[in-house]
Length: 103
Image 1 (cartoon, rainbow, N blue to C red):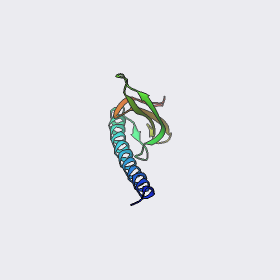
Image 2 (image 1 turned 60 degrees about the horizontal axis):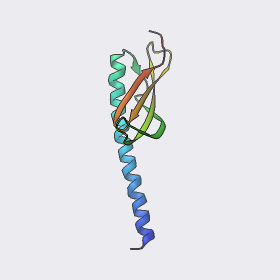
Image 3 (image 1 turned 180 degrees about the vertical axis):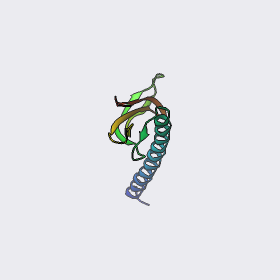
Image 4 (image 1 turned 120 degrees about the vertical axis):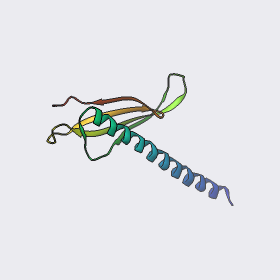
């Protein structure tokens, strides 16, 4: 086995690990979004959340964590579409908010 082969095996393994981890986090955020929309009495549209930001930031203990921003669409009346936002740091949801909307 050559060094080049080991490198490509590492790249493939890292890609699979990252994809698996990202899918797990997205499923976690989707479930949290569904619960949040239910408590706020709005309807989650498309049953989906969209990753719109990825960065590295330090948490309150100084540890470097992955910062993520997810967006989702919701409605109150079924006619108009609004956007909600979720901010995560590591595995913790820091903020969930809905843009101003009609009831």
